[in-house]
Length: 260
Image 1 (cartoon, rainbow, N blue to C red):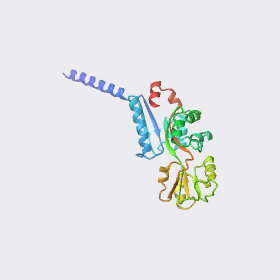
Image 2: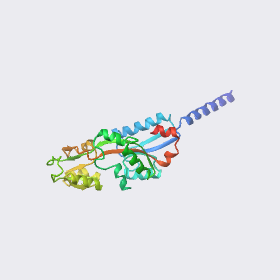
Image 3: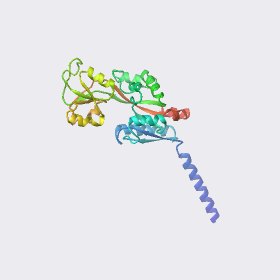
Image 4: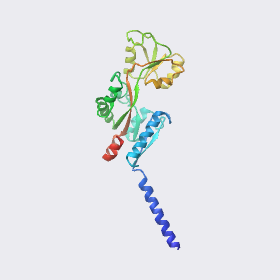
């Protein structure tokens, strides 16, 4: 009787182990992003991971690391390039390669959402250019996660905001990119590059009068110190779902199709 029970127990354990092994993913990837957990951005990243798991029948598991847990976007760009981190949802690092400015801040590439949808969708003309720039750094871009059109938030309304020939006599924090400074100087502002982490205190203490970069939801973070929003549509901010090129090349065609 004991022998029968022991044999039955072995059979159960073998079956259980086999079921667990078959249910385990073949590929497990890390994917970081810069925004806090629970935000719409984080929810989108987790939804992507969920869909990938469904479409690959559990073969691919993507673990999401929000709020720069794997490093900020400048660090994760290099980590993905080297294959230390497999995937990312982030912007391109133009500090790493100036050509990648086209993948982040390049003014007036498109004029409206419909143009953006056409240009930045897979197969679009802008997507094709930027894809090649990512690939130069061993990063395979999969898709654009659209953020929206940008503008500027200010403490008060500037004179003739729609006329670039009228000096605004207002200092605007811009990203530390030459194209940003040139654009806002052309719009009539005094461009002042300062780190994003210092923007709130900079507006609060009068170092700058406002901030540029990102769509209206970014300006919402400065609602206590800025009261005006001007939608200049100076650039279409897009973040990218990316994967290390070496990791990508080793995946079967059906898994690649599911990820895309």
